[in-house]
Length: 325
Image 1 (cartoon, rainbow, N blue to C red):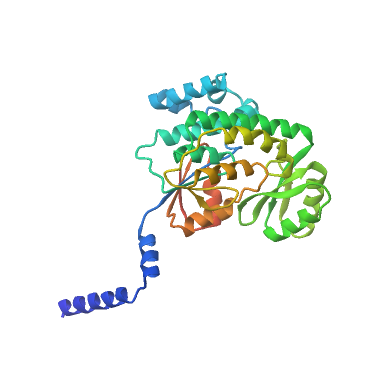
Image 2: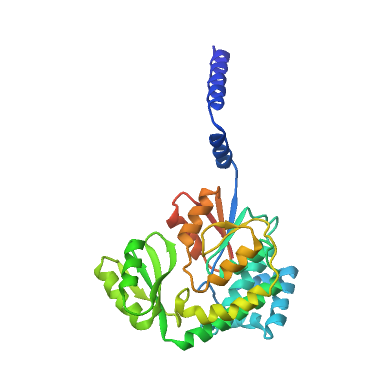
């Protein structure tokens, strides 16, 4: 009797499989695969002492840190390992420091083999190195140039950013468009969390309108510039020449870029999207959703902090997340 039941079960299973079309089989195969998405954090994840233990315990890491010191022309490791929070907040330190640690962590991971990568704003440079699209040295020079260009752009016009919680994206976009002055949606971090960016008076006015429209909070952030807004146009122009003159390779896996929230492999397209990134919004929610739709089963955040892990879980509560920091 037991053998008969097993035979019947197997026949039913076979019949079900025969009825699957090609698309269903492909979808089933994707679900059965393990696909690792590695993600890299952006500005704000820094902390005093970052990278020190890795420097002291790993010769490969130590060599990369020392290479970074030489490229930058100052010992950024002294600030990373022993500096204060205030010293780490300097733009010309913060961005390279986060990039360096993120890449060193990826380079020293055993059997690092990404199926897809993405980075939040600055983190996109780390993702490009991890995917072998950019050399470490070339990317670090671009990150340093980016930080300096953004700092100069911040000094042209008084500008800021604000976090908006629990309000629909389209309402935020509509209110920004109706507000006098420059203010735009800059970071789509997760459902219910959008950051707006622009001129100080425009952002302040928009915050009041957003709260009146039902936002749980619309809170000014302690930043000195309107990142990912039209006010970064001078920085975009300055960085464009540097990016265009830097060699890019086809990555070993798709990189889901902030500008388009799609997996890109073409080096020329990656370059253009990276140039556009400074003035375009960070579509992080859409990028994570696209990675999940394309088969991502595990998300690993590589770099300081756990910000992206928290955002990913808010985007998809079923996502499996972990971190290497």
